[in-house]
Structure formats: C-alpha cells, structure tokens
Image (cartoon, rainbow, N blue to C red; front, side, top):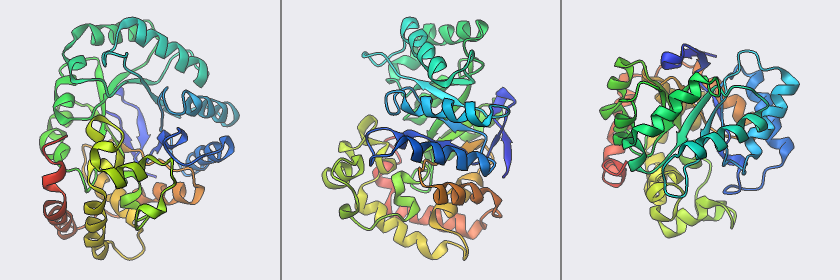
Amino acid sequence: MEYRTLGSTHRDVSAIGLGTWNVGPSWASVSDEQASEAIRTALDAGVNLIDTAEVYGDGRAERLIGEVLDERGREDVFVPTKAAPDPDGGHSEDGLRDSIAGSKERLGVETLDLVQLHCPETQAFYDPSTFETLEQLREEDEIAHAGVSVEKVEQADKAIEYPVVETVQLIFNPFRHRPAERFFERAAAQDVGIIVRVPLASGLLADAFEGVQDFGEDDHRRTAAEDGVDAGIGRAGGETFAGVPFQAGLDAVEALRPSVPEGMTMAQFTLRWILDFDAVSTVIPGSTTPAHVEQNAAAADFEPLSHETHGTVRDVYEAHLYDHVHHRW
C-alpha cells in the first residue's frame, strides 16, 4: 500500500481508503457482519483511512467502525466523518456540536480525527461563523482537524479561503475531470488534502452491471437509471453515477475497456487513474464485498498509467460525458 500525506494534517494515510456510504439504506441490504468484515478486510490490506458520516445508516456506519476498531485497535487508523447540515442547508453552532457529540459516542472517541461539513448549500461557504465554530471546536479538542465535502468545484474554492479547512472531499474520476482543471493546483499550493469520493461512479466504473435489470427495486441507482440524473442522490443528482446519464456512462465504459491494461480490473484502472494525480491524497471506494475491498486496495500497487492512456481517457470523456457534467459540478 502507498501512503500519502493528507495536506496540512500531516497524517500519512493510505492512498486507497474505504468509504462506508453503502452501509446506508440507499443501497441493497447489508448486514452488520458484512459491513464489519469489509472494514476488517480493508485494515488487513493496509488501509488506514475509513471515511464515514453520521447520516450513513443513521449512525450505523460510525457505530460499526467504532466496534471494529475497539476489537482491532485504533493506532494509526484515521477516521474522517461528516456533520449533516441543518434543515436550512447551513451549519449552526448547535447543529455542529450535536453532530460531533453523536459521532464521538458512536465511534467511541474523545476527539474526532476529522470533521467535514457534509455537502451543505452553497450559502454555508459564505458564512464565516461556521468556520469560526470549527476553529473553536478544534481549540476545545472536540475535533483534531476540519474539512469540507462539496458538490461543486466553486464550493471547494471558497472553502479553502478559511484557514481551518485542511481537507476537501469531492467527486473525481474518469467521468468527472473538472476538479483537476480548476482546483487541484490551488489545493496543492495551499497544502490542502484531497479525498476523492464516488470514484467508481456508483459501480459504473467497476464494470459491475449491464442494465437497469441489475439493480434492486429499492436501489437508488435504479431510480437514476430509469428516471434520469436529477432523480439520483445529491444536489441535482450529482452523486449517483457521478452525475452522468446511465446510458452515457455505459457507453463510456465500453469505450474505455480496450485501454485497461492486462491484469487490471476496470475498478483498479479507475483508481490508478485517480492516483496518478499527485494532488489526490486518498480515494475512498466503498464496498462490502471482501474480495472487492482487497482488489481496490491493490490498485495502489500498480505502476502509473501511460500518457497515451490518460489521453484516451480524456478523449472518451469529451466524446461521451463532457456536455453532461463538466459545467454542472
């Protein structure tokens, strides 16, 4: 496993982390033991960053992470979590304090490693009091570090104007190139860590399915595949399939497939492509299947992809996806 420094936190984290969004109800049913075994498998593979949020399974993901770390030990494991916005889309001091208290209890810690604002409305990034509260919480040792999770590059740009923000979590993959064009250079210059979420575009970039029939009735991906991008999860549907129309995503995967080197899965190819960008600190694919967790972790061990391959990925993006996503997020 490769380890990278997470911006000004100065924590060395695994280039491949583990995301735990799929513990929540928007995906197929996952038992506590399945989710816990995925966490154990990740730790065994050298993963030392496990990303979560209070809303993942209404606190269930945090609880399971806390239980596994009680069992396995917490040394050198870094657990970023996220505080949900208030109903108005912002983050009040009371709301942040309540979120942090709940996360601390479920994770079983006195100080949270990293608290990220969880995709609030754009207005929140223009409210200095929110970031003053984060500074105060850090001074009180309620949190060790603070960051943001964003939907739009412009939100990330605004967030890092506040010195307390040490990390930004955003969507970046072969279907979403804009962060590399508009944000990575500035983030690196300011020593801001970048956590990449939704790297496999809800499974599209894992080459995991062929059509709508592959999704369960309650799977959020089925809704987005049948009813369009705006029916997906996230602001304007930007989370499900990384915000690309389902068929366009399938077509793009088909066009990418010949460029995947022998011995790599499509998922590993995608993760390696992301890691080829030096500004990326860690990427957090989510899976509750131990074999997939192991394969994802192994992506960090492959050599960087060739310039020609990167060129092909860009060509596919421009041909199939650019018009759908580039200016939206």
